[in-house]
Amino acid sequence: MTADLAIDVRGLVKRFGDKTAVDGVDIQMPRGAVWGFLGPNGSGKTTTIRMICGLLKPTEGEGSCLGYDIAREAGRIKKQTGYMTQRFSFWSDMTIRENLEFVARLYQLDPVGRIVDATLESLGLTQRQRQLAGALSGGWKQRLALAAVTMHNPKLLLLDEPTAGVDPQARRDFWDEIHRLSTEGMTVLVSTHYMDEAERCDRIVYLANGKKVVEGRVPAIIERSNLVTFKGEGEGVRQLAGRLKGKPGVEHVAYFGSALHVSGTDRDKIEQSVLAARSDDVEWREVRASLEDAFIALMAGAGADTRVHA
Image (cartoon, rainbow, N blue to C red):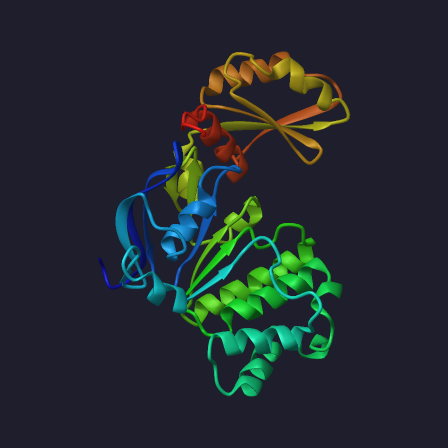
């Protein structure tokens, strides 16, 4: 275990009966970093997060979190970790302030009033502190949840799909808070499906079928995909998707807003296929492959899920 690593786990495996949820995951995450945890539903992200913070005991593997052994010192890890789940799990019939006061007492924080006041102020909740939690919008519920899981000043913050179902402005505000906490020394691991959020991370880890497929900085992962991408725009672009799928060199066809991205690793073949499908009302140009292009390729490369299911 290295002192400058917040998370240092190797060979993590978790089985539930005859179903393997996580299969040999390694993560070495420096302190103070913001890492993105990505992958399709069922890829093992949540199970891995729960093993890291001591909520689940690994079937196999070993490692440390915040310097503590994940199997033998789970209680110590939990005290220094904030874990925000995707589902809002606070009390709807209590006000924001009452929720935070209750959580402060659970953490045995003192003095409760002063700590809650500071937490409300830091996350812009002071003016809403008397509102019932159940009456809040998704973005304000998210802010309350973040306040609750960080008011004890954890060293590690684990966020499981924290911005699902909130509007773009609330997501942007949330990420501003994440980076503020990181600059103050907190380590953050966040699972997300949003590519723009992944690009805000120092480094990303991609899981598929319970295995770690790739890890690195966003530009390096895009570069490693070796993708050539052409972007088509115009009124008739949707009619071309079916014609392009399966053509020589065309490995991935996907819509990005009103545009069509066609990607592959053989430049000559994909260019010929795009030219053969051209039409007067569609304009094509080569663009830099996006992170989403790279992930589509990673998912295809991961193949079918061969884990045994119960």
